[in-house]
Length: 401
Ligand code: NDP
Image (tube, rainbow, N blue to C red; front, side, top):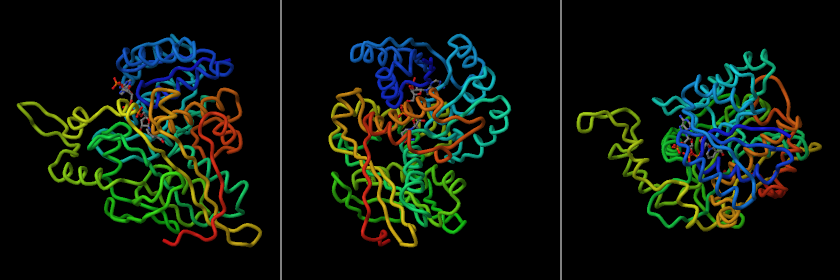
């Protein structure tokens, strides 16, 4: 029986809290706080109507360490689940250290003024968390998150040694809008417009954004074009599973999305440096976010499925083998259960699972941890039971590209 404080009240938080409410034996009390309290109240109302579970709400600016620490002092949770934005990671970690409480998030820290996410800032908290006897679990979403758990599952059960690992993220959903992003537009566009990078034989190889394309047939979605990208789990996987020779990340994008993105980039709307408009500074990308549809509003109209998984090639008992582990998630089913589409669902469910494993002690350690540092089995078992069932297939041959 444990109390948690969830910070942030967007789509991912909404799913996580709806899921926690269905496991009152683990999440005895949930307090939900965010920048604007009315967003928390709307989630609490939906949770009460669907599951009869009471969520207490509060308002906090998580950029403010003292304000966040005061809230933690008042609530006295066993764990803080950070589902705000990557910008708040360090301030919430600082508040946890100040108050002696464990920490979990789904995305690694990114400074506001540079589109660069790296674990170095959060890994630098290792000694402070260890010395305080506290645990921080980083990246318990789908990717990063489940994709790292799939990799450790393959390493534990299917292959003696992984040589190559490809993470394939396909969103086959259609929201009926000309252009919209499925999660926070600012974070999403910063990620997509960054140069691609993959890991090969101890080196990082950089290529221009969206310049490497492959067609792939995704189960229950169909054929889609996917693009090589940099993604944060590549850094932690290369660190914690150093025997893997090549790690790549691919994401699908439709032609319509790419056409709009190209124009927005060409006209300067994706810039993150300030420009003067009518005498005051504005950041074009933040202005663009304000005019794009709210990701949460897409849930009602989105149809189709996501398919995210890992393809690993390596050796088992001296033989070369390739395995594909993936989950398929249906946007409409996710919406029926929680009022949110599958991109929020596939992140919010793993956030709840990571929190449950920390609260029950199934995953425990002192310091700062990434997902691939723990036993995958209890996590894989919870994925099957809580809405993200996975499948394993042996492929006849490695990827041809
Ligand atoms: P949203 O933008 O929908 O929600 C973010 C929430 O954080 C909003 O409620 C926002 O408040 C709140 N917030 C922002 N700034 C502050 C602050 N200073 N103090 C308190 N609250 C604040 O994002 P998502 O729900 O889509 O994503 C949440 C997180 O999940 C992000 O970090 C994202 O990168 C990550 N993510 C991870 C994925 C994975 O697979 N690992 C996939 C998708 C997302 P307000 O409502 O007032 O704006």
